[in-house]
Length: 261
Image 1 (cartoon, rainbow, N blue to C red):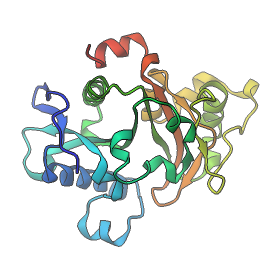
Image 2: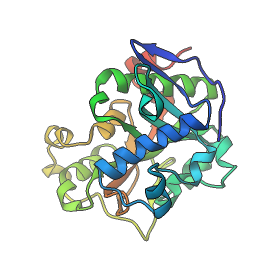
Image 3: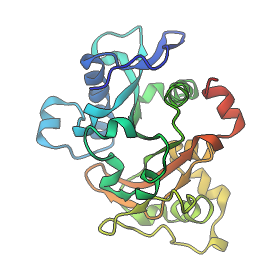
Image 4: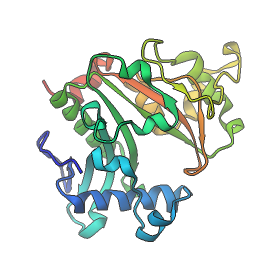
């Protein structure tokens, strides 16, 4: 596992945001992921994950784990929010990014820059507030600055595997927020589900935005874009889209807030 003091902890009241410093921190984050993804959202876990009640895979070993800690709690319960970060440099330890199980990202990997995958984002229900989300993004911003990351990407999800429930939102993303071709991920042929499900003239942007999951909406606020094709993830009970954020195109108000000089 990757333990490195990339940036100083960020404090807000009884909450602290920092990178995991040891295996116990990572296990606590994985147990939070299990509670959210499996117990709350209905993901189907393999036997090892079920037995240990923590969501883990081979990618965790090469990742940095960003965690929000409630200092008034003890044990595993102290971790109330998490994100995992996988840089190109560390990806070499395992040979691929998690995103590549669903998308072809050769266009991004061909760029001679540091790229970073964001994944396994979750926050305990009572902590899903603007201030906690801002803490997570402040940490990501500090990490981006420290590692000179130029391109971020990952998968974000709609709950459920019935694409018909997301026709309007997926069509809106396709018509209004497609990633530029030189960076664009494309869903692997075996998984590809078209997002072009409605003509552009029938899409009502305001209505589509209203039903977007908060995480996807947050990426769009950062000038995020989406790849070509959705992917049905039956194990996690989600419909996934690929997200790309060019850090030099972060909207000014967010860059000022989240990315230190």
